[in-house]
Image: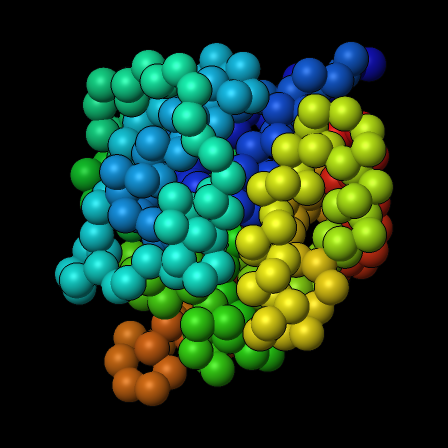
Amino acid sequence: MTTAPRLVILDTDPGVDDALALLYLRARSQRERPDLRLLAITTVFGNADIKTTTRNALWLRQRLGLQAPVHEGAAKPLNRPRGRSPVHVHGENGLGDIDLSGPTPPPADRGAAHQKIVDLVRALPGQVTIVAIGPLTNLALALSVAPDIASLVAEVVIMGGAFARGNVTPFAEANIHNDPEAAAEVLAAPWPVTLVPLDATLPCVLTDATARAMAETGDTGRFVHDLTRGYAATYARHEGLEGCVLHDVAALIRLTDPELFEVRSAPVSVTLDGDRLGQTTWSEQGPARQVCLNANGAEVVRRFQRTLA
Ligand code: RIB
Ligand code: CA
C-alpha cells in the first residue's frame, strides 16, 4: 500500500537553516515514494527583512529547481517594530554570504502569503500541513482573516520556543521573540500544533566533519558545506561548537521521522512583556500542544545526510 505524500506549505524566513530545510523537503519529494510534497513557499521577515528573505526564497527556488510558488508575507510583527536582522548568524545576505549572482530569478507569485495559506487550506480541507520555520506573523494573519482554517488544516508544525534556555535572550527563542503576539495567537488557536523548540533542535548538530564529508559527495553536499560555513563560525564563537544547529530541518524531520523525538502534550503560553518577552511556558489553559522536548540529534543529522545523499 502506498501512502499519499503530505502536502506542505513552508512558511519561512530564509535563513541558512531554512535553506537546508528546503533541501530536505526537495529530497523527500523526489524519492521513489515521496512522503512530502511542497505546495507553496510563503515568506516572512525574521533572519533578514522581507525583501531579502523573499529574494532568498526565489533564489533558492531557482537554484534547487523547485516548482512551488513563492508568496511574500509579513514585513513586520503584528504590533511591534521589527527588530534588527541577525546578520552575525545568517550573514548580510541572509544566506551565509554565499555568492547569489547568476540569472535573476522570476519574481514572487501574486497574492499575499497569509491569503495563499487560507486559499490552499480551504481548497484542500484536512490535507495541508503548515510547517512554520520563521516568526508566526503570516499564520496569525491567516487566522485573523479566516478563523475557519483552524478546523481545516491537517497539522501545524512550528520550529520555535524554548523551555530550558533561549537563543536571543536567556529565555526566548528567535522565531517566537520576533513576534510574540503572533505566536500567542497561533498557540491558542483550535488547530493541531506540534512545537519543535530549541530543546529538541539544539541536539541536532551538523558537525564540521560531516559538512566536509558531504562536500565530497557532489553538488548538493558542496552547497550544504558552503552555505553553512559562516553559520558554523557563529556557533564556534558563541557556543564553542564545531558545527551548526539544524533547527528548521528538525521541524521537517519531526514530520518524516517522529520516533526520533520525545514529546510532552500540554498547553503552552507565550510571555508578552518584561525581561522574559517571547518565553514559552507551560500553561493550565488552552489546547494541548505536542511539544518536542528532546531529540536523538545524531540520528536526525544522519537522516538529513542520508536523505540528501
Ligand atoms: O531559533 C532558530 C530559528 O531562528 C530558526 O528558524 C532560524 O532560521 C531562525 O529564524
Ligand atoms: Ca527560520
